Image (cartoon, rainbow, N blue to C red; front, side, top):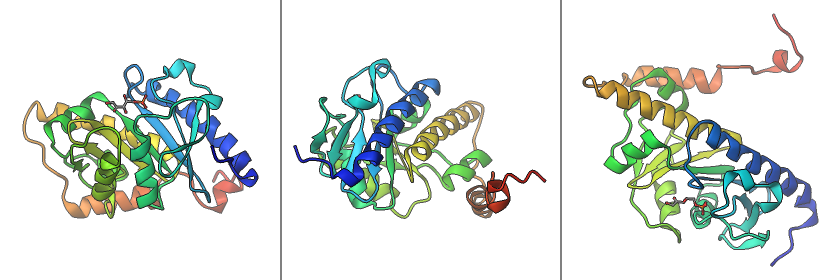
Length: 236
Ligand SMILES: O=C(CO)[C@@H](O)[C@@H](O)COP(=O)(O)O
């Protein structure tokens, strides 16, 4: 195995802790069954990523059990075999330099949309906020190799949505960091459930595009705490 350059050691140690801890969020939000989801994060400035080990139950995950791989999916540091989706994550990092993290789940409602091969229409404000569009469907691809990654990148490149429903499989989300990608996975399941429940009682209309655009812009650029006043602790 190739050694990790010393100047990346602190970052890798931090990402081992972060990626490990965020798997608890997949359980907390009921997005995974047994060992069926995974999280990875890119090591900024290096052709490396930190990813969950394959098939290890979430209670047994530790920072030390995370696996560091290069961006072709080859393990570089770690005693465990990496996630079976390692090649998919690695392909996304190679193809989408702006992506800092990838999350995969089989969350129930979103995966039901994936099983139907149907995009989730952007019908509610929470969806316009986070996704800015319908949540798209990517192609079916077998696990292992580059095909899942190719499908994710081809579907999400140039798309506002940080989530894709891989046909007949489940959800992949991307983000600038692991927390953002986990948030997208949580929100994806939430809106998948809401729109599904709404459709049980009748047709659901997509929001008008100008409303989607306005909601997305506000949530991405205005919503929440931002700017120097908050950083200085001002409260009025
Ligand atoms: O999607 C699948 C299997 O369908 C896998 O991602 C899932 O079971 C998780 O596998 P890993 O434990 O990450 O190897």
